[in-house]
Image (spheres, rainbow, N blue to C red):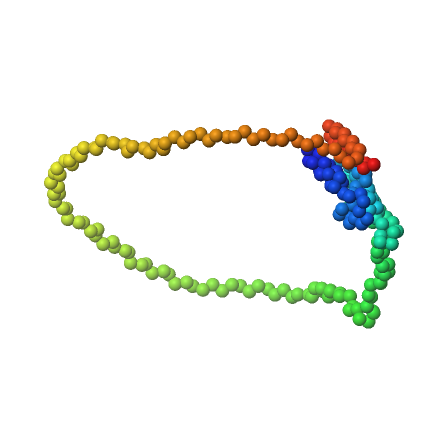
Length: 234
């Protein structure tokens, strides 16, 4: 909400900087004569403003996000051009002065249909006709005499290898290890920097804010879920 105040005051400050005696003003420097905006908690909002160069704008939105509005301006010949538009689920659609009209669409052409002589005949799979089969009598199987298997020689394992026993030779006794004394721990002295003097701060006095007076009539209302304001230069 604070950003709304900043935007509102910056816009009004730009209005106060405009010179009313200048003969020509570009659209970027044209002063705003009136401005009104609102925002509700359900998502609906609206905005409308008019400038001293003849530009007028108005837009509203519903709870579904659909927008409708219009804007108008004065062309170099002095004629006012007005455009109305809607934006929503059907896209952006605008009607008014100076909007190019799309050319009429050509009627759809009939699809190409080949001549019958160029169409291949419909495929028909061949029909299956079972033929009569003659069954022959089975002949008696012929058995062949198999030779008897010859016995194979039996495997005789070799005697297992027996190593000769070795005589045990005990090792000579080793002398006990010497006990070394542990040196005493001497901590190194730590570096302590000298104390620094505390910085001295000079009290800075802030000038009181200058009261802003808008160059017109301003009315701002804040609600729990939105806001609304109106401004009029006259």
